[in-house]
Length: 113
Length: 115
Image (cartoon, rainbow over all chains, first blue to last red; front, side, top):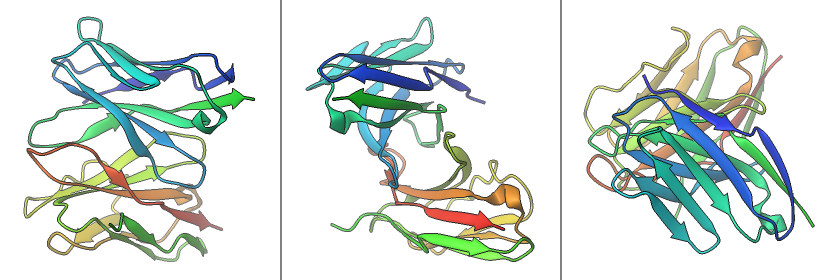
């Protein structure tokens, strides 16, 4: 089955700096890579996703890059703000009929004002 | 509109007791997932329902765990003879279903504490 590794497990940045979270996956058949943000006491919420037919996707201050050859993908947050503080999870899976994805172990991001 | 709801929000039980956790998915979502999240850890897949297809139970950790779903509505996760290692937050998510957007919409979770 799919195995997703995520680094770092914790990340502290100054407000306004950039944050980068990296993930690797094992199953070359995976073609769907979502990122979820989990705030304290809440369920995860999708913030951005990318499919294997593109190498990069941006949405305002967040971007995701994908390298299918190396089987890794990354989340980039620019101009970080205190409200970006949360736990971020990457995931990998198939966008076809069965939508099961495998989640990484999470990165706790702290943005220091 | 209403999101995914879960009940109870917190459950404290004694070792050996049975517990039942409930999930109400978003109306019209055919896919439903259960995950377990231990303190400070990632999401561990438990079970997946898709419409009338047989569920994928491959993530259930033992035969003490079971789940049911009535059609495309409510789901219940049952843990029998609870153990202390069952303590975790149990998250439910729903999704529009196969062939459509993959986004999973999560509920707030049920925090289970086994004493």
